[in-house]
Length: 413
Image 1 (cartoon, rainbow, N blue to C red):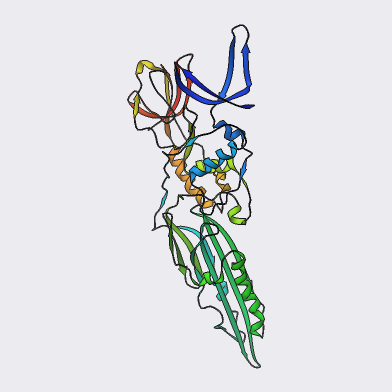
Image 2: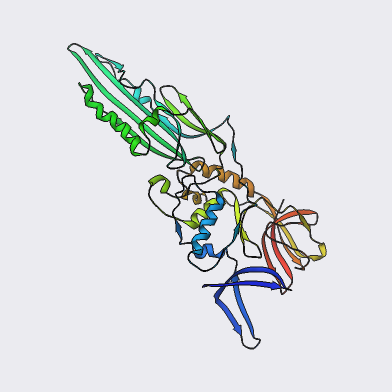
């Protein structure tokens, strides 16, 4: 049971820990008069309140710092504990896709719209009431705060027979709405319809209107179809399209695919006030940006890049190294399903983030060290230490004030 009691711990009048008390772990030794208290840093509150949900619906999306801040805000609404946070040292990573080899985010095949049936005495042409080319391109959707690719095509096939003289028409309609969230996560809505053969052209007007209604019902005004951009730049990325005339068009993306802001949850897709578990969104944000959260001695929760270490290197005297060992290990494949909490299909994002993380962790040398004399060295998570001429970045740290020693795990850098 995590209480609403906060604790600050000092050694020689110097603060070294701030956190919260677990009252279920209290024990009192009558003989010695010693009270044993188990405490946690405030990061523990994120797992304690993993049931909290939040409505993520801001049009422009969420900066990584905001994901952390809103979770903290919701926890503070539950309990009378203040949680300060800091993200001033956090930097957005860059994950570049070269323009010469862009990602294909979606493909619209429309060759069947233009197929002509076998002749058998009939002559097939395209009636001018259809469109000679599809309307396709990009626009910014202010409702969802996303880049949207639109495709609309209307083909009217005319069939003429000479004896007896007969004319019939068939309408063929295809619509696509490709909303792009989180840089390269797509949500695709589709419309496709083929009318029967009719002898009165007006009979298929309702089918043509159904194509327009498809767009309108999904938040796209009809006039938007006729004012689209061939390509668009957004948030450090270039979105383009590649045509194979009369067959298909592909939606392409290049540049920095790591978005400045993310769109978590389903509200962007449903346009309803759907809520999402805050812990899942926090986990996805940390994985996506290869970031971590830690606390300092004042209890402040800090958002940091995993690869942004302290600038200064602390030299550890060999006489103070009680135990030391190194090993090389391959990091297990990360669980990329964590990213499924983001709006849109995260398949492309999973692939790119996974490759980045595997490259970051794979075959790293690490060390386990027991270092004497806590007062002599001011060690924290992500501190850089030099042991036996090699520099390591601390990834785990424990302090034993009774034995006056640090127990650390660190990566060779």
